[in-house]
Image (cartoon, rainbow, N blue to C red; front, side, top):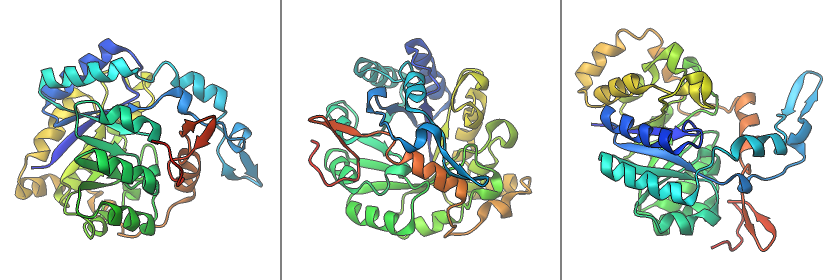
Length: 316
């Protein structure tokens, strides 16, 4: 039986009642975990090259994402410290495990002081080794995404976590991810480092449904992370990738299936062979652009200085 993470992301839109309803809906669908982003808008970093972006001769070298616009967009979406506690209480009441993705090292003491023992790490922090070490010291289990990470970065992160409990999640830094770009065979490479391997599915929920998750389960994924929403997909930032309660319930049912049952479903998915791809795909230009922007998007502020998650500087 695989575990299913219903990832709320920003889909609650900062509304606490929506957050409560999402917890209840995820629990009723049978998901094992409900996950939130733990980040503050004030952790957003101003970086000059993204103010106007950079395009030369039709080629994009840096995406355009002005700081002020992004700050104003994120400010109402970020959950307060009190909302974190409310989220955990709601999860406990509903019978679902709470999770959070941590985005800055400065947040680690706060998160470690809350009553949960597992935490998630974005693929853009797969090479943030000081952050990974600090999290491993304070949490019993890490779910580490590998989107837009190079092989040597994954290997070093796994070496840091050797002897500890952790899951490596294969993911692709394309939103939503076309089925032919999934490279699900990469889970086979990740199994070199841990027996607990999964898949973070960002395919189009409306166009492709559960095809990618079913294929990953058939190929042995022990964890499926999927964005989840109870609102109209057009109203949320991650809506195109997000399953609704009915789809989440179906995903949970698939995660409980035996391999023979999954094989029956695979026969009805003509894209299956294309989804397997390769164990060692090269990052596409689009993925490199996303890596460039998202890696370092948030950082800690220590005595007036910005400290990125990968820097060997004291934060906590």
